[in-house]
Amino acid sequence: MLRRFRSLMDRTPPASTGTAGADGLPRPDRACYLVGDVNGRADLLETMLELIDAHIGGTGSADPHLVFLGNYIDHGPDSAAVLARLQVLTNEFPGNVTCIMGSHERMMLDFLQDPVLRGPRWLRNGGDATLKSYRISLKARDTATPDQFRFTAEALDSALGDQTKSWLAQLPYSWSSGNLWAVHAGADPMRPMEQQSPRVLLWGHPEFDNTERGDGIWIAHGHMKQDSPSFANGRIGLDTGAWQNGCLSACAIRRDGRYNFLQT
Image (cartoon, rainbow, N blue to C red; front, top):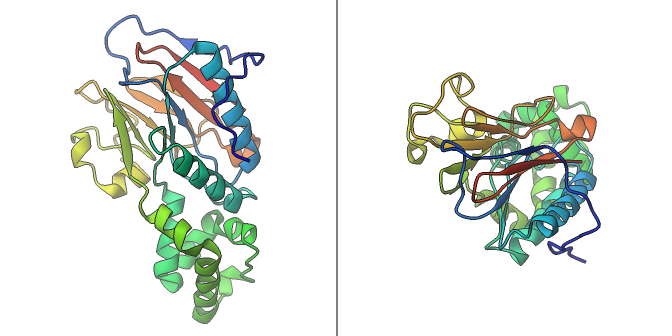
């Protein structure tokens, strides 16, 4: 049964809080919750949804938007369950939930289109865990024959089904509200956000970390694993290696710029 965004008033929101009293901080048009890379950890996804429910109840945020920053699959044990859960959320709350395309989703879709060429790279980057979550095995992936890759892609294509494949293929590469943008990996700081290439949004840009934008835009992203979430210099980093250490991170941002980090 789907858990709606309940108000769990007896839960205490995390204490890590920032205050925006001056210009230059993100000000979305509506309160939003940005969630970092889940990478197959369905258990942490459920915990995070509970934390978000609690935070909504504690702050009284009206009509918030929930944005997932990509990389829902691979590495962790429950990729199939994560995709199923996120589809339910987006179908139930189409005006309140957005899932962005991540690099791992793109690799899996590329594998389905060209398993022989794309398969080795995806599997080396955690794709074997996704296959296992769908009860599909590819033995000796480093020495697999072209026919074995094709057979595996056919099995995954069937396991995903048309609905999930269509949902994945239509995931947007970005989301924006006010001066806040959410992408998977980063952006070219010298280009307007409307002119960013899908490749940069999925894989990042070499100048993203060390060159500040001049347009006042803040960018929330995952993809680049950090020890803790960050909020500085126009960038909000939220990939804290959930599949490895059990720490899934999110950032709650109100319209006035105040923010909280939420962590499992």
